[in-house]
Amino acid sequence: MLPQLMQHANSSMSGSICLGLHTNLINGFRSDSYVRKRILLTRRLQDFAQARLGRRYDLEVYSGRVPMPRRALIRAISGAHALVCFPYDVIDAGVMDAAPDLETIATYSVGYDHIDVAHARGRGITVGYTPDVLTDATADLTMALMLDLLRRVTEGDRIIRAGRWRQIYGADDYLGTDVGGKTLGILGMGRIGSRVAKRAAAFGMKVIYHSRSSTGPGTRVTLGRLLERSDVLSIHVPHTPDTHEMMDMSRLRKMKRSAYLINTSRGRVVHEKDLAAALRQGIIAGAALDVFHSEPVGPANPLVKMQNVVLAPHIGSSTDGTRRKMAELTVKNLELGLSGREPAYSVK
Ligand code: DGY
Image (cartoon, rainbow, N blue to C red; front, top):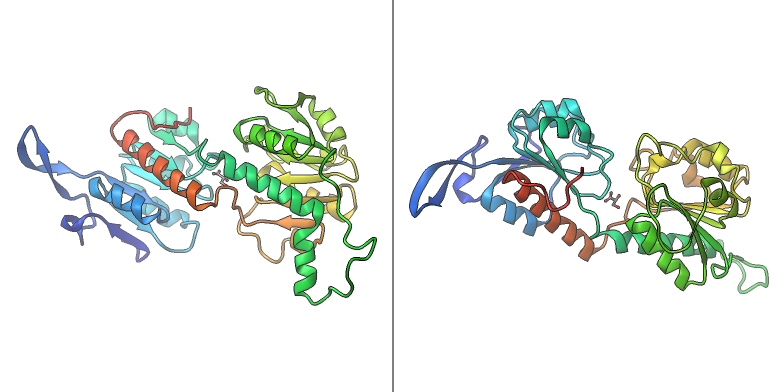
């Protein structure tokens, strides 16, 4: 067992690395012959969630640097019946095939672009995820980033902390942009996009959107129109082969020079180098980003040095209540998946 892999199970299991015996009551008779299923967690969940899982299953919880290195993951998953993973874990065919007994995967996220779902389906492995419970939290963060960017809040914070706030209340000082009356363009009218639309309408924004399949509040337009007319463009499409780097220079050039881009979806929907160039060259006015090509973002990323960019460390779902609900749903997905049923929220 890797030093970072901790065995978590109830007391009867302590010290055991392999599947252990568990005392069950079957038809009124005590039986010690039932093998507890094994769950690998690539990172810890909240204590309450692990305690609930630990009552029925053997848990191995990785506690080293994230993401769990691929070789360690392949070694650790070999005897697992279930996997709990996170958006940065790459769960491809090679990882799944290292686990011949794998029955179910539960990702602690609404996004599942890190999982080869087709391969899972082919193997009969169910995949659970956590939509709905994080919709409001992510829509709130989208609004927070938009207000911050248009009103230059964290830019002002940086100015004060750097000791560069020299004078107060000048007529033209720190001018931002009014939110009310502006056009918000929503790319992807799913659960989160439609909640953002409602919030934006309450701020007096006009909402337009582009979506291939869903309808929602506001006016549906072509992608070209969306890019041309939006004062703020907010991205809410999942990352798929079709959306990969779809916001590249050719599309950024179609936006207004005064427009802002917000991304709380997935970093790889945006061509990040093109975005940095567009911001540097004034092709668009600013950006607020919660997601990136490669996370965590380090100081070498050019976006870090730009004053017209607001950065957040992938916190769309990071509220106490939401993360608790995500853990509850992850546990439920696992329990259903391990009993041979579809998870409560199952990726199809
Ligand atoms: C998810 O759940 O996929 C989101 O990225 C969380 O912020």
